[in-house]
Amino acid sequence: MKRFTFVKNAFILTATGLLLRTIGMFFRVYVSNQLGSEGMGLYQLIFSVYILATTLATSGVTVAVTRLVVEEMGRGTPKAIVRLLKKIMLFCTLLGLLAGCLLFFGADPVCRYWIKDMRGVMALKVLAPSLPFMSISNCLRGYFMARRRVAVSSSSQIFEQLVRIAIVMALLSMFASKGLVYACTAVMIGNTVSEMLSCLYMYIGYRRDQRNLPDPTHPPLPRYSVLGKMLSISAPIAAGGCLNSLLRTIENLLVPDRLTQYTSSRETSLSQFGMLKGMAMPVLFFPASFLSALSTLLVPEISEAHSLKQNDRLERMVNRSLHISFTIAVFIGGVFTVFSGQLGQLLYQSDEVGFYIFILAPLVPFMYVESIVDGILKGLNQQVSSLKYNIIDSLSRIALIFFLVPVQGMKGFLFIMVLSNLLTSFLNMRRLLTVTGIRLKWGTLLIKPILSVIVASAVSLLIVQVLPLEGTVGMLLAIAVGTVIAFGIYFVMLSLTGSMPQFRSKPAKSKA
Image 1 (cartoon, rainbow, N blue to C red):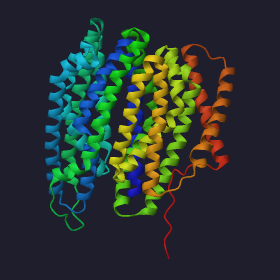
Image 2 (cartoon, rainbow, N blue to C red; image 1 turned 30 degrees about the vertical axis):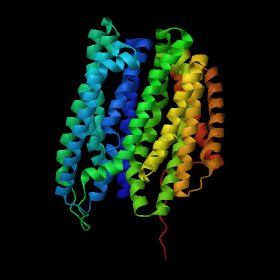
Image 3 (cartoon, rainbow, N blue to C red; image 1 turned 45 degrees about the vertical axis):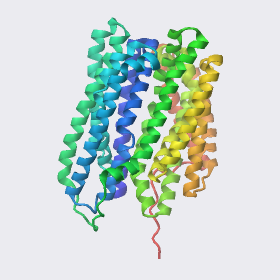
Image 4 (cartoon, rainbow, N blue to C red; image 1 turned 120 degrees about the vertical axis):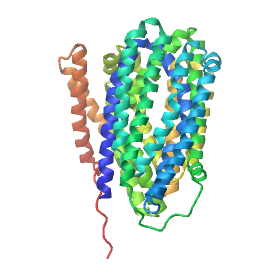
């Protein structure tokens, strides 16, 4: 029953993530066409500051609530679980209000001295009221994860996205022609209103779920300070999240500034930054929903296996998770590499965006698998190590951006991104192997899939080039046909080389 619940939740989260990313991808293309590349650059700078504020309001909350509720279930009474959630929601509300006030009253100095563009002030102030609602939503999301009932959380995200799109499209039709200030603000109004309504949606779901809380089956846990225990779990994650977000914000604000020294044009630097961060990167992370569900669900499962000292189960979960993740991510990276030019033209009518996709596509396996490893490390209570590696990575990136980008421009920044992703992947993977003592078969995990995808991509590209496909429809068909052909050849190659992952776990052998 438990395995069925895990598979069902994984399916719900994967389907939800894929639907959201599909909708979000087309929505982002629409927004980028309305704002232009310079507007997307400004949008990314505004959102970089907003992400810093959201990190303060939410970082560590979901993981902490998940672990606390998992511990309480089966031992505490339903009333105790409700009391636990009330205290945490109060704390989250206060934390969100603090972050919202800092964002609202800090909007002017942030835009003047950090972003160096006063066109972002109104947008930041509009975003501020969303933070208390976002904090509460993350609390409730942790509760539903612990209860292994992700349908409410998933449906709330779909509801939130649809509300955001409806509001933004309505407002942009009225205000896009009035300049970037009003256009960016219109997008942020949609974000704030959708966060508020999504929070209400999840709270209604939580109140309904209270009636189904289980009765205790074990002796109750000793009384403890909810705030103290929550902070002991969330503080390292929050500290790491805030510090990492601060450093990432500094990085995102520094890139256009240093690019301007290379291009001698603020408009050009914002445009390049917008094409990379606002156009190319979302395309690369579009298929990540296949693995993000696995990363989310691994936290309670890994945490439980680790706390119960079920080492065999832990090793099986880690091995299968990494094998499946590398298999999927390597194929996606290969497809993006081969069809990067067509994707840039099809979505944004831009060869430059296609070039960015081409350079970064080989990093997809490392970027995707890093999120899986991060989920495993959190389940193993290794948040401090993740914090340390994030600090090392961010400081290295900032130093390299400061010295390299004014000399090499965007090519220098792309080199920094490649180096950074390889470094963090190596550090996190090394920590995982050290903590668990697991030995991985890298030939099966990575080398054979890479060789398989090279063959599959080359054959599919040769076939597609022979077909008479022209224009926008032709590019779309070329990508679709090429992906299907590559998919078939890839999995045949995996089977022939004995590196096909087991998507269903084998039943544990009974001991005599």
